[in-house]
Length: 85
Image (tube, rainbow, N blue to C red; front, side, top):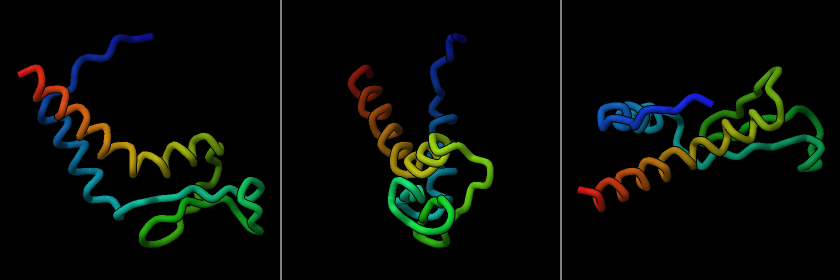
């Protein structure tokens, strides 16, 4: 596994900006068989439903949860950096 370098403040701000520009959360993944729906699997956003053709169920869950996870991860990074400084 490749060692990743620490994120710079500019990189964190770029990630935060991309997240803020996306449709507001929360996003939720709906899986036909798991959620007892008829039709296709999709991600429900605050705007339109997103159908991810060819995505695995794990990919769909990751994409849907990233909308909530990324802001929390950024906040945690900033909290930890404030302790170190």
